[in-house]
Structures are given as C-alpha cells and as structure tokens.
Length: 473
Image (cartoon, rainbow, N blue to C red):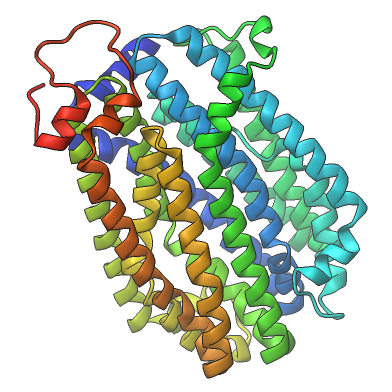
C-alpha cells in the first residue's frame, strides 16, 4: 500500500474499524512501554531493594517532563501534518516535520545541560529523602544526558496513517530496553545506573527508527528536503500553540507527582514513597489504554476535519469517549477485587503489599472518568482548537493540586490516594460541557479551515454540519 493510500483511508474506511485499528495499535505500543516500566520497577525492587525503586520513581517527573516536550512537538506537528495531508498539501506536511525536529532538538539539548549540572538539588526538590537521594541522583544524571534521544515521533508517524510502523517504533526499542535492564541489573549488577542506561539505549533505537522513517524510507507521503530545516516561524508557532496543552498536561502531571512525593515524605517517609513507587507505576500502566484510545483517535479526527467530514469527526469522538469510560470502569472493578494480585506482580515486600492494596483501591476510583478529559483535549488539539485544549488542561491541574493538598491534610495517606478520584469528577464535567460547546459553534469550526481547496458539493461545510447535525458524505 502506498503512503498516499494509507492516509486517504482515514476519510473512507468505516470509523469504528479505523478507530479500532489505530487505537489498538497505539494502545499496544503504549502497553509495551508500560510493561517495560513495571518490569523496570520489578528489577529494581527485587534486584536491589525498595529504596532503589523509590529512587527511580523520584525521577519519574523528569521522564514525564521529557515526554511532555516530545508530546508537545508530536501532538502539534501531527495535527498540522494530518490537516495538511487532508487538504492535499504534502509540502506543508514536510516543512512541519522538519521544524518539529528542530524544536525538539533545541529543547532537549537545553534540558540535558541544565539537568546534568543541577541533578543533586533537583532530586531533593522532587521529594527524595537522604536515603533515597543517592539512587535518584545516579539514575537521573544518565536520564538527563540521554534527553536528546527521548522521542521517536510516533504521533507524527500515525498522522501519516502508518500505524504499524508507529507500533514498531515502540515495540522494538522497548523489547531491547527490557532485555538490557535485566542484563544490567540482574546479571551485571550495575544498580540503578544500569536501569537508566537501558532506558537511554532503548530511546536511541527509537530515535534512529524515526530518522529512517522520515528521511530515508522509500514511498514516503512527503519529501523532507534540507532547505525545510530553515525555521519557519509560522509553522513553529502553530506546532507549539497546538502542542502546548500536551506540555502543560505533562508538566501538570509532573507537578502532581512532585507534590505527592513531598507530601508522602512528610506523612509516611521512605515506606510511603516505596509504596507510591510501586502503585503509581502499576496504575500508570493499567490506564495506558485510555491514552492509546486518545492518541489513536487524533489522526482520524484531524484528517476528517481537514476533509470537512463532520459526521465522521463526531462519530470518532463519541466512540472514543465511550471506549475510554467502559475500559476505566472494568479496570476499576478489577483493582477493587484483586489489588493484592496486581501489586504482587511488582513487589514481594510485605509493607508495600499491605499499604499498597488500600492505595490501589482508592486510586482506581478515578479510572472510569480519567479518560474523558484526555480524549476531549486530544480532540481539540486534532482540530486545531489549541485554546480550548489548553484551558481544559490548565483547569485540570488547578483542580488536582488543591484537592491533593486538602485531602492530605484531612485524611493523611488515604486522602493522598483518593484525591485523584475527586479531581476527575470535576475535570469530566468541564470536559463534556466544553465538547458540547464545540459542537454548537459552526462559525468558529469553519474558520479553522478557511476556504476548501476544491468544492465538494456532496459534503456540507464542517461548521454547518457540526452545528446542525450529520452531513452526507
């Protein structure tokens, strides 16, 4: 199948089929990474001890922030690329890809320098105790030095309709990562440094695969020429504006983790931080499919919005929301019923097992609604409504941080574990209100697209269709 036919399917094949194909591929990719993530914690916990796992967990906000940089340029670039391909403008897609790489390299280099220079004070700001800080420092220094390799631009690859390669760019590096993690920790006894080196090695493989895809692969949908690497400030501005909600979301997640670590340090010390290292990593892995649904949805929404297929846009968002809620409800039930079995996959420590069951049950109460805000924000990004995505993301952070502070002061450890569920109710309500408002604003939706490249009399303008109901396709 040619590159063109791959992305043109986004506007012709059944929405349910495409969403399953893209969402399942994305979810599988993320699950592979989640498997690595929990395997990493298992090797650290069993091969070294709970404090080593806690040290790596202390650095997790750094990994989230690095992911935020990658997701910012990835989500912004993918939105521009999807709409450019939908509007039959491969040159703009090519220029966007080149500028996306420029943005990421500049940001990653800055993070590398600052992180390597200030690693010791950083780990204490992140919530480390004196006994955990040495592990966090060794792990974090290597992670910072490897920041330049911390993305493969899988989101932009999916914008080309190439779900298989997008999956491969996760599966192959993560498989190598898991093998290296086992080798470095369990066989060579390299400690937390071995875990960090395995992570960076996997990232380097992913980065190499992305360079092949965009610049060396035959039958590309676009040709990225050397002259396109000259900064195009209009494209850079659009990519950063659309991707900004992803950065804020990741930075907000980092802020929540940092605040949680510091509250746990005061409330429960090393023991509580060790529990959080296990339960938070497990929880993140379990809800991965909700992120996979949202990311799989994005190229489908962006392309069809560019094509003015409003009914397909609405159907994609509706199916994505339903899938995320149903999955979250099933997962919540599972965690309530067998928390000990799930935690036992990662830790053999009796103290972690005892407190971890309560923590996981309370964290799981957030799962049924956790995907709603993620899907709605991703939909806004896909159609270029960066302001709405940003407002939703910032609003979520402004809810979660004070709820966490109040809950911890009133209910100690249990309040910290349950704070997420309270926050998600508010975020869900706001998300659905904003989505309804989006469907009711035909003029603003039409303005995002401008005049169509070619008249298509069989399809109503997207603004009219979204404002008035389903359109013929």
